Image (cartoon, rainbow, N blue to C red; front, side, top):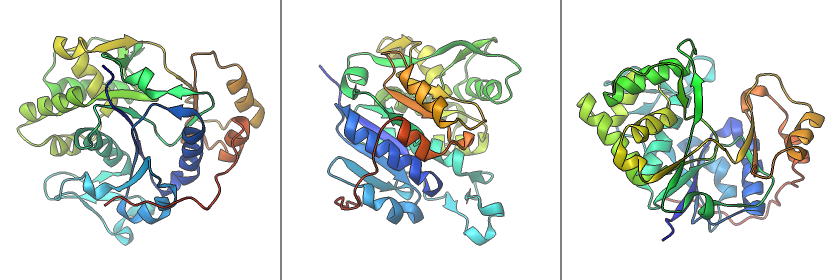
Length: 302
């Protein structure tokens, strides 16, 4: 029996060109999903409304955030950074909130499985999401032994996973669970957050806002790997369907074309991380996608 699968994308106005490219590639190449849910800041929702359709639903972030966590007015924010504040936790910034939105989206939306597609992904080959994510066992991507004890971010995130989930201290090197087009099972994600709440004695949102340095993907991966019942409904894979570029230096048009042309058959998508500042137009040209027409039916979800 196939599980229902949805695509889930958190995004924001600075990524709208990359998001548009993702949407164009999904519409051309991706099948087997119920809905493509897009979660954005409330003030960004009008900018994203034009991407709405029968299968793509634009949702305001406030629908998924606790009432006690509020966006600070822009004139009080430094350097234009979005900051959320509360009386319960230290302030948190956009990247932390995006992680919370991903988790809350999976917990609250109706499908059983979610393939998380960030804005800097673009499909260049046919991809059946149901075949990839809807089987009895969900794929659990790992990068074996990729995190060393000295890793500046991932080692800290790993140690915080141990604390949040009350797990034995991890021995390094250890596996990484961060990747692209990762699949989450709703039951496993729900139980991950319930485990955090049992340990913290607070809501999972409050526990994560207080932690700040965390990775939603590591939390899910560590929980599943340490729960025999949940691991039994996952299939470990070291193969990602995405050909990814994680470096800081921008890619040239020729380098992007080479990545696409040399991608093995198992790769259906390309991810050039936004922090590389690689021009979106060069990525669009490399994957041979024209811009969408402006006469697209609008849909805003309430």
